[in-house]
Image 1 (cartoon, one colour):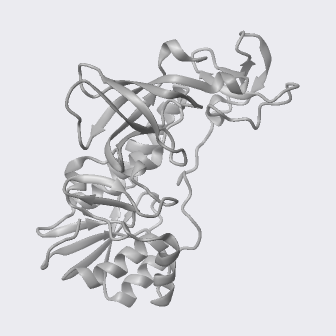
Image 2 (cartoon, one colour):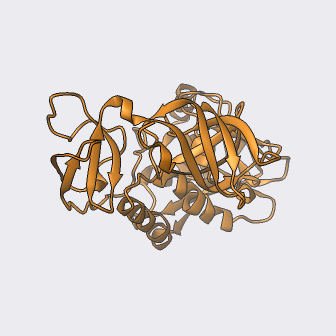
Length: 333
């Protein structure tokens, strides 16, 4: 979204190069600029964020979100792991914390600005220009009421150009990319059996929360390449098998956050089941509640992980995102 004149901005500033570039551009685009650091760990704002705001003459607010983060993200992740699933805390954090907290702070005529590589205009969330950095997948769970107040200055930018721009302006930023998980996961370490797809015990695992479907490492030697096929929390078993056992024709999407809900109960789209995985064609059948759906992939997909985000696209437009669950009749499709 390109804001009109006489609008102000509240920039979500992490101290990384992307949010720093967004901060820099807002000084040229908006009549007023504030910055907010959402503190989820009680560590206060990074020195780089403070230095950039000081150099640009921009107020930096620190929003204490530690309790909210612990409740909505860390505790949730623990529950999902205990269910034998693989959560995506980053996508949920955008929806529940990182954008939700600043959204609650917006003043009249103020846009919420982030350094995400994505586009939002006319009520439509689209992929960013840089295909290697597009983050529309991570925004698919963010409620539309928040996105309607968002501006993404890096939508048409390439990562290399963004970094060069920040360096040319002498602003400080945290080097290196952000990590997938920004908190330490205290694993249970409760060991159990590793079994093959015939139910035969072939080894021992050190806790189900250390594994995810498709994983090869840490399984021991089995005279052939084996992969994690499924986590069985009810029996504390890790099921391993051959690569062919990883493919699924179906999945279920739950808790769908609709951004552009198609008409009717059946439609076709492309669905992205992991951040670094290309979207694939699929047919979607909505359940009666409208918040869950059965997905049939046109081509069986490898390592569909319950707990991950499934983002639905038509062309480059995001229809919505939900949480993947297993389709019970399809474990060894």
